[in-house]
Amino acid sequence: MKIRVLGDGYFKLDKSYLVYTKYMGTIYKACFNVLYVEAGGERILVDTGIGELPEKYRKFYPVERKPEEALEARLKSIGVEPGKITLVINTHLHFDHCGNNKLFRNATFLVQVDELRYAYYPDRFMKGGYIREQFDIPGISIEPLYGYREVVEGVEVIPTPGHTPGHQSVVLTRDDGVQVVFCGDAAPLSENLERENIPGIVYSPVSALESIKLLKQLRADVYIYPHEPIPPDKLKLIEQG
Ligand SMILES: [Zn+2]
Image (cartoon, rainbow, N blue to C red; front, side, top):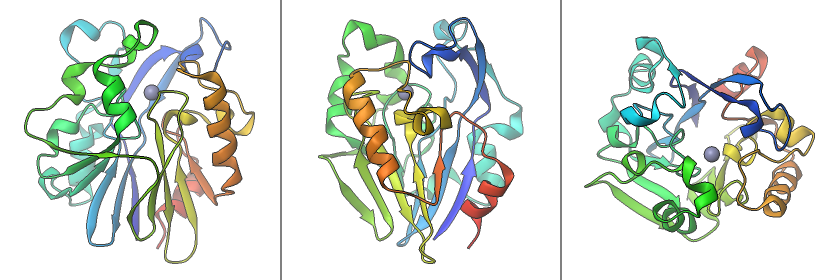
């Protein structure tokens, strides 16, 4: 199994969106960690960053991105053309996790059915996270998942609802036994997992806490948080092998 951590630049948001009832008024510059995984003959992406937001949303979420930081450029830098991606796992359909879905025309998208359904008609208090142009791409192939799924050997998705109704996290078990967990926004920052502080944007606070406890129980060797830079030593461990 080959794992590479990619990105898609940065965006600024109030940090209270990431940690429930904390940091109000603190502006946080968030990265987008995206995973590229080769396993079982598949070329897999986990989440796709923020992409290009429709014009009317740009002032709310200013994106900072050099050309070489864009997901497509990052993929090309490791020798992968977007058309070569065979599977995309979207942890959920918030606009900053599926923004480049449209680039991957030959991929099958693996999304929990609860998330797909909810994205089209979110409750009013969750509407801000879903931008239809980002996830409703004509002609792409979507395979709805109904809970746990082994995607290929060593790549599993587990439901971790709470942040959204159909959120899922990804568990990677490398050939050398090292386990890497991509939390998705079940834990956007390390503090969410380590201090059991639920995300600030949350559909069900109780489910969010249960999902954090489930992720911790996995006792993975490395956890990847989508919106926090990965320390160099951890990055080395993730990408080795
Ligand atoms: Zn989210």
